[in-house]
Length: 524
Image (cartoon, rainbow, N blue to C red; front, side):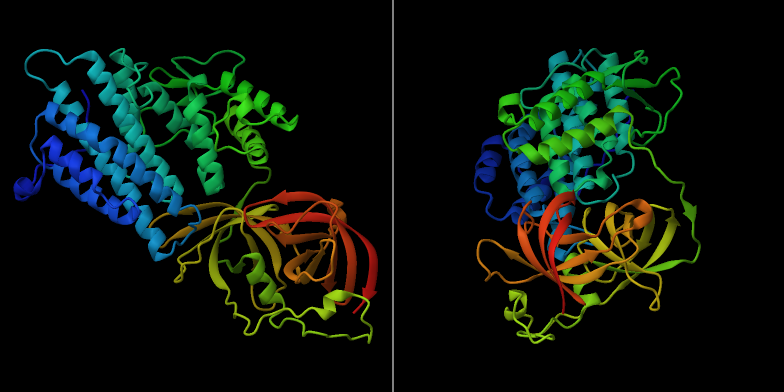
């Protein structure tokens, strides 16, 4: 017996709900799709009323078929608006995220209403194909609801995972799990997609990575198999269906009633895809979705292979740090301004010479923006990183991959870190996972030499090497400045370098950490 979370009917809405298919179709055609938030608000209000209106299963199914493509289009537009969203989000991003979640909630409720009516028929049995399509559409809606939470770093509504486990078990027991709907994957594939995204560890993923993983699974999720027992020698995960929680990487004993998600064939495909991309084959040639580009796709395949084979293991034990706090500044530019509040003046030539052109180019900051550090509580700490939590008053728009300046108090020196994962427990409470990059960081100005000597210097960070780790000095550059082999002038008091960009050690959506070779070093 299915137990689904459903709202009760609302008598006050009876006269306000449009249930004539032709009128609904005409209204949907007139929606202002150029304004995604207005469109989503109108669809949410219409579905809210429809879901609380008494209606026969046939009529409700016919109306949902009209709404379905419009919901998908509106959701895609909202997701595009969230591409640059971080935490805590700006007001417009917060509105878009809330609408995206409400859109999938109401869409799912509609299919819950249909499925409940089909399973509680008093006379006759429902058509198996129709039952399979209803379950598939409902699981797809719940999968998309989970994805909306992952995009906005917010937890799934209570009961969502429990319903997904229950629906798949029902479909499997009814021999409906592998029947695909016209415009939705089968119940088994939709369920596997949700499980695999959860196992990909979304808090560690940026928007582009998460979008790429979903595109990949749209084509290849069927390579993963759900079985009742583990397959010897295969990669996979035990799935508990008795809890309202996603699967995790912690090994679990396989007991009666649990499922086994076999990812062996999927991992083999990921490995082969990464090898072919590395050899220079185009993504389309090897069957990847058109929106996936070569280099990001290669990095994504490596990441997913690691997560879907055994999962990343923590290298260092973490320790609780009761009462500890940390000051934090986010972003390359903000860290630079914190370290060097006033830019060097144009034509500043301390040694009386003009051999290096970076001194002859004005660094235009008419009124440098003041940087204020935010204060965070340290939840736990380790040799490689720490977890922070806080409730910032301002919309900082933090993202996975952002550089961070960190220090324990005003007397301490600034160190360098990077955000590796983000969660939001509620509308204000933010949790961050931070990896330490260097115990020291210094401000620098970088002027690329692109065949001429007139480009404007860019704010960057000098990362001193750590001899104990055999790490050389490195530069942390804003994105899209780096090209391997490029020459650049670097002002890093008390030095003025001319150097060549070397290997890129790490690239995130916010910065590039690179090595370099110096061929001229003069004191400033």
